[in-house]
Structures are given as structure tokens and as C-alpha cells.
Amino acid sequence: MPRIKNVLLTSLVLAAPSLFSHSAQALEYKNAFGSINAGYADWNSGFVNVHRGEVWKATADFGINFKEAEFYSFYESNVLNHSVAGRNHTVSAMTHVRLFDSNYTFFGKLYGQWENTWGDDLDMFYGLGYLGWTGNWGFFKPYIGLHNQSGDYVSQKYGQTSGWNGYVLGWTAAYNFTLLEEKFVLSNWNEIEFDRNNAYAEQQYGDYGINGGLTLAWKFYPCWKATVTWRYFENKLGYDGFGDQMIYMVGYEF
Image (cartoon, rainbow, N blue to C red; front, side, top):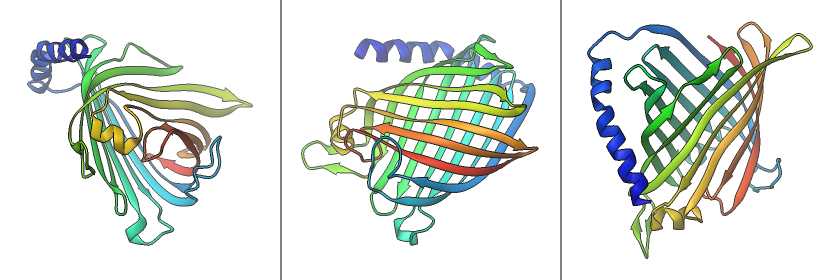
């Protein structure tokens, strides 16, 4: 594991000149996208009954692509059918910056969860990615990175969860297709955390974890979509072992 860390750190140091060169010149704009969505999630459906009930939720996302870099952000507000004290929120911001005009990238991501009754958690990933697998059919964008974590959980044995927290291996992917002359998109995001620190492993019930979602979107009207997501996780979201939920949303794209 230390060898992986050293390789990633060395690669990021060597990539620094490319990052500065992009910042010193105007970026070449390609496109931008975004959406707002509303619906509900059922923790009791799926393959495992997690016994957390049904929650109403709202989400928003925005992305912008340049020739030299890509940026994506996501916001989620959960448990809107409960009092304010029981609600939680998720914010994510991710970037790929191309290295020396290649398909290899510097990858960075912030993933934060704020829970009024459980605790706060901010994951920080930084490493290397790849943007070479993309086309009209969709895309597959993998990445691997170092993981730092900031949280308010304190273990009586190991102390606070904050600090070095191992590694992450992940990807985002999408596949565009038509069925009965209707437009659909099948997308997936997935992250595998491993070699966690002892305090975080205690909080999340394991020294590794899986976090992701598989979404089928139906573009049933210009700018409108309906989505069904199978949200899955293992040793994550404060749950011991494998769990999942189903999410049903209607969204407007702009």
C-alpha cells in the first residue's frame, strides 16, 4: 500500500506543470448541462431491507466540459418529510484536468455528508483518471486516488476519524440507447474505499467500503426525465455490511 501512495504522489507532482499551464490560458468551452430533480427513496425495498423507511428528497446537479478539463457538482437534500433535525444533505464536486493534452487526468473530488442526528463526513480524493473512453454511445471514466477524510466521529480506541484514510478506486459511466423510439440512459457511479484508518473502519464497520448507484433515465419529453436508481453500499453510510435502496425521481434538464 505505501508503494501505491508513493506512485500516486509522484505522478501528481509530475503533473503539476500541466495543471499550471491550463490555469495560465483560457479554457476551450465544449458544453454544459444540469438538472433539478424531486422524488423519494425507499430504504426498505431492493435486495436488503435496511429498515430506514421512505424519505422525500430533492437533488440538483451541474457540469461543464472544456477541452482541457471537466467539472461536475451535485447537491442532495434528504428526509424532507421529517423535521429539520432529522434531515441530511450531500454535496459533491469532482474534476478531471487533462495532463499535457492527453486523455490522462489529474482527478479530484470532494464528497460531503451532513447529518443532523448522526454526524458529519467529508471525503477528499485526489489522484489520476482517464477520459479516453467516450463517444456518442456514452462514456466510462475511471480514476484512482488517495483518500483523506474529515469527520466528527471519535473512537474511544483509535481517536477521531479525520486524516489519512487509504485509497479509492472508482468510475463514472453512461450508456445511451433508444427503445421503442424512446431515449434512455443507463448510468453508474461506483467507488471502492480500501485501507481505511482504524477509527473510520470502526465507524463504517470495515476497513473497506463500496458506494455507488445504477440509474435508468427515461427522456420522455424535451427537458424532462424520469429516473429509477438502485443505490447500493457496503460498510458505508453507517451501515454494517451490504445495503441498498430504490430511488424514484422526476427531473428537469437545462
